[in-house]
Every structure is written in C-alpha cells, then in structure tokens.
Amino acid sequence: MAMTSNRRTATTFFVAMVLTCLAAAAYLLTTGITDDSISLALRISGRFAFLILIVAFAARPLQQLVKAPWTAKLLRNRRQLGVAFAGIHIAHFGLILMRINHVPEFGAGSPFSLSGAFTYVVILAMLITSFSGPARAIGPKAWKVLHKLGIFFLVAAFLRTQLPSTMADLELANGLLIVLATAALIVRVSAFVANRRNAPTRQPQ
Image (tube, rainbow, N blue to C red; front, side):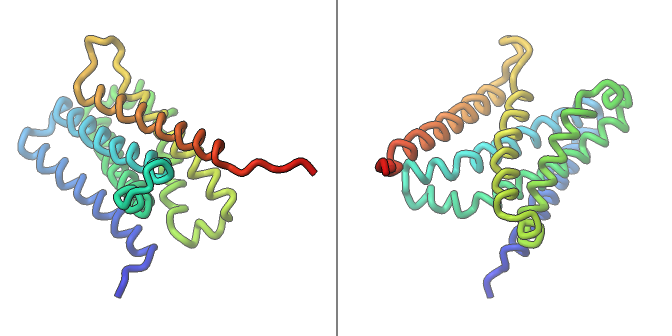
C-alpha cells in the first residue's frame, strides 16, 4: 500500500532529525563534549542542511530548463527535501541549546536571539504547511506566497552565514556552498527569463 503524502512527510522529517541527532551524538561521545566539538557539529549539520536547501531551491527551475527524467524526479521530491532540511535544523537547534548550556556567553550576545529565531519561525511555518491540513487551512495563495518568499529568505539567510569575514577565513566547504547557491540563483533567473520569453503575448483588443 502506498504511503500517504502526510505520512511520507512526517517520516522524512523524523528520519532526518533522528539521523542528525545520532550522528552528532556519536561524534560528541567520541571526541568529548567541548565547545570546539559542539561548534564543529553545528557547522557540519548547518552546511549539510544548506546543501539540501540549495537543491530544493533549484529543483523547479532545473526541470523547466532541462526537462530530463532526473530533474523531474528531483522536482517530485522537492517537498521531501525541504522537510529533510527542517528535520536537520530541529536537531541543529538542539546543538545550539547544548552550546548555550555549555558556554552561556554564546547565547548572551548571539545574533541567534533575533535573526536566528525569525529564521526558525520561517522553517517551522513552511514545515507545518507541508502537511495537507494546514496547507488547506491557509489556502493555495497564502501557501504559495509563504513557500516562495520563505525559500528565498532561507537561502539568503544561510548564504550569509557562509560568507567569511575576510578571504583568509574562507574554507573549502563555505566556498563550495557559496558557488552552489549562486549557481542555483542563476538557474532560477534563467528559468524565469525563459518562461517570460516563451509566454504567449496578448493581442491588442
């Protein structure tokens, strides 16, 4: 029997969250719970989640431009990619709380208190409306606005976290994510231009 959409969404979320928690726990138990180890676990989980977000961000425009079987499959699974991203970031939030508990001054002056909190509000809003009941409750227009603006906001917010203070601080992982996010944005713009160019023009009355 085929899995229902809501059940598949919930399964994807919990699997992504639990796997992230297990991987982080295994790493921290191996290396010891220190500020450095928690910080590294945060960076790895954040970067992996951002990579998934970039793929979800590029899924529809890639299908519009390429129209290949793999892009069609990617588009069909875009919701699950977004839900997996949310699941990883719930586990990521647990690591943030762990670091605040381990190093109280991290929470005291952290930008997470404002910009990070709003980012999580957007993540949770998009996650909740990925289920059919909440999606019906807000209506298709509001759903489209939330998810379209939301994914642009999230890509911009997480791209900002990858930008180094100086070029000397640039790491390979940061650089790759910046390149991929930029490429995804170019794909988005290209698909938009192509759609506008191919759209039928209205004849004057």
